[in-house]
Image 1 (tube, rainbow, N blue to C red):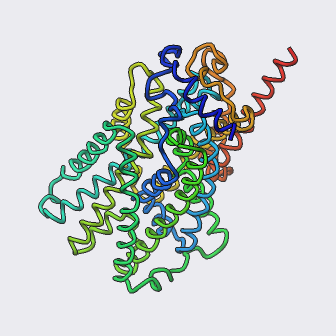
Image 2 (cartoon, rainbow, N blue to C red):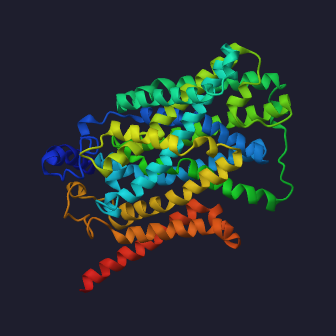
Image 3 (cartoon, rainbow, N blue to C red):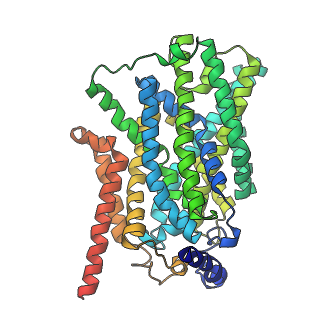
Length: 483
């Protein structure tokens, strides 16, 4: 209890004059620590945040892609549950600093990479988030286009209608970002229970059409041997971890608003594995039902709903998917890159401007190509992202929990010449470890003989980067003591 009180005092007293003493190149109001008296997020807020972020079309497509790839329903759901339990561990470890000190991810990562070097992992994380933002907007636009074709069939014949719908949904996302973090919190609170209810209604409606759960869940795995199964399972599991590897880094952007460590830890532990597994099961069951009804497993829910000739049902389901996609997009894919881009030039780039940059870059990453098929989505996009982000997580966790014992000098995170200055603002040991972790993970993509390195990309990058960073930092300390 004494430690908790010390942390709260630190957040209110020490940070009150940061706006005066901090370096303008490292500080603005959006990057400043959140004082204890302004932290209002409870266990419910974090649980509902994860429900809202999990109940979305990419989660559905994640599960349905495993079915389309050959898994049976139990294998697909089990893979997703295991992957989310595994990614919850680094999630909670990185969340601790946000809840303790009230700082966002791009400030937290200054401790390990240096006050200027932090821009490297922040931009890598931001670019991945921009890709996700574009994917979600493309999916949302496709859902709007499907609804438009239902209520106005002639619109489907227009070549540019799909692109207009995409840009409309993009603009809606930008409007929510412009209104700020409290609007995001409001959306999560009201959207989470509604999305679960709609998802369950869709599940029971389509399985009834297909003859019940028995026929839907009786389809066997397409893998004939254990070797075939493992060849698909290993990169699929890495993809599951990669799905939330972005938020595993920037989770301090949310936990900085936590009333307590317990609130964020319990809320996340209850929300993430439960919501992901439940909605994944819905995706699995609905995809299996589509195979019975249409003779093929349709992994895209928007394409699936367009097959039905019941306009009312299709429109209600598509509206629900749109709201879920909006919830996920602004929470998971805008908050972090907005802060990351702001970190590049705090005096010029606010949270709002960072959000606009995210939106523009998301379009430039051509999300329609990232969603070409389930293989490109899971084994290309998700596993590839994990190769970039796993090493960052390894370095951050090693630095904060192992080397620093969860102690940070907060004022120095906003100051040039302090203990996180390293050499010219860059900790080159962290950059070397990051390059090594990414290089080893991606080596499996380039050299067929070591393909397993890419299949385990997040895990390989995490361990390699974390171990090299630990060795280099301990070696530097030994040299300082001996000198």
